[in-house]
Amino acid sequence: MRFGKSRLERFAKSLYRGCLMSQYDYKPVYERNLPHFQPPGACLFVTIRLAGSMPAAVLGQLKQEAEERERLIRKTAASADLHDLLYQEQKRQFGRFDQILDKAATGPMWLGQPEIAEIVAEAMHFRDGKVYDLDAFCIMSNHSHAVFTPLAKEDGTYHALQKIMHSLKRHTARAGNKVLGREGAFWQHESYDHVVRNRREWERIVAYVLNNPLKAGLVEKWEDWPWTYLKDT
Image 1: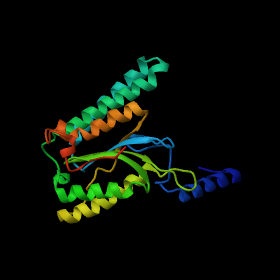
Image 2: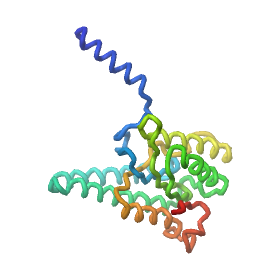
Image 3: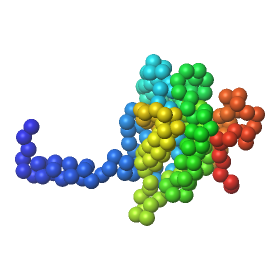
Image 4: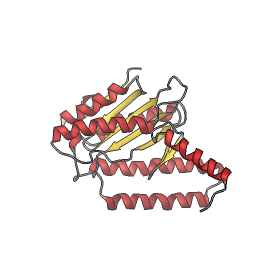
């Protein structure tokens, strides 16, 4: 490929800007295998799971089904309804995903060990008030849910979700692997997250998070689960 001088200069400048921008800098939208959205000041519902906690075949089936249903929605829905229908479909797919995690009989269950669950809980609390405002979390044996709002920095931008999760997962992975006497992947690389759109949805999601142990038949009241947190309001 050949470049004229002006085009080459623009190309070099774009490369330079790319080198200056970290992959963990704040971006309203970014994508890996899943799309991620972080509108400025938005509250987020985030789920992380242990590496190997879901069989690849099951993940592939869920992904294929999600893609097929999204294509159908985009093909048949009126443009005015498209956004809401896609959002409802995302919630439905997450419900299936989370149900499979809750019922998993195989795969790693390291978070079920109190010492490791405490590592994750402490890491979540440590970041509260520093990079996010933490509303709630629940730590299950193979995954964890959290609801939080990334905080604004002095320059007016927000702490990036991808940087928050990278820091939290890196710290807890190192500490967790040390307890387990193992090496290798601890968390699944990519997290699941979506934007909490309003107060009513916030209440529904927080209730969903807190009730995870009840749904799994582990306790009779959410307050009895030692790895559940709800901010005083």
